[in-house]
Length: 427
Image (cartoon, rainbow, N blue to C red; front, side, top):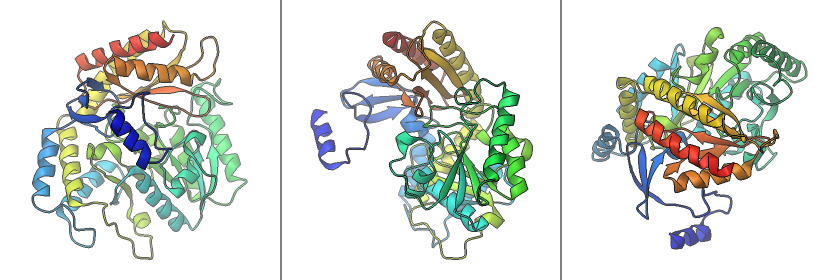
């Protein structure tokens, strides 16, 4: 393993982060478990950053990929593509967007990049509203709208971005307000910004912020925003790269917690739909999707092998009600972790929905983020046989828990017990 690490450092960028003091190589997986090159078995509570959504080595997906590879792997969007049409039909059907069109990309970054292109072209404006503490990808345009300094390596951008309050409920100037007053204050902030700037193309927002530490606003905040945005003709882009496909349990899409004012104008997706295959995309009303007046194709977006995987994965998820499983098992896991947190002075909050759970850590006796403790817990969990993630903005340090949606109650209990010991090792 040390040899592979040395080779990694010789040929890959210094900024390409690796987890753990002694990085591990994951060689294979099955169900909710993975194994490393030393033969160690881990319960996977991070799924390759929320990407292995149903299960590792899911037979239905591996069979679809194998059979498609035996026919044709790729032809580009210049030719008719049956798997792409079939997956687009299914996604349009479950999208909640009227007269939906679907464009496939290879990642969430590219999906958000495409949504920004569509919104700015449709509105003829390069001004964008985004949320503080947000993350939308690593391309030039998506870095330019990301509201999280830890993931924004440059201030240069083709877009004029203004950041709005509201995505972080427990911190910031409105944290002490109740949910109703918090929403009212954030709406007032939005109105104030709109009074000072050129008309923006869109607001882009994650219903639950992923990299930001699984933070979210009160239900209905984006519906209230939508009413104001509609007054100005501003589009709403819901970044569902991490929240989509039933992960939150209560809803199939994260935006449905804010559905009072109707669906978003555009929805971006990626990660879980491919169960490890590289799929991203945008769903939008036809008038928005069709607004481009120049040629635009995708070489690898919608390629046959990834579409076959996505179709098999979505079919499995729907037929086995993994959204319902996320609600039931995730609810039990959250309550178990909250019971543990109540005994530990460094755990500020256990938050989330379904199988998208964040644990915010602070220095005991203070309200200050504790990144040291987050790293300690990450290492201790791995030593105990559990893989988790971490994240947070400039004043937060959070553990991120997002297992495959087929997680069993027994596995949730096992993971919670390991995590409890890991947390106690830090405090």
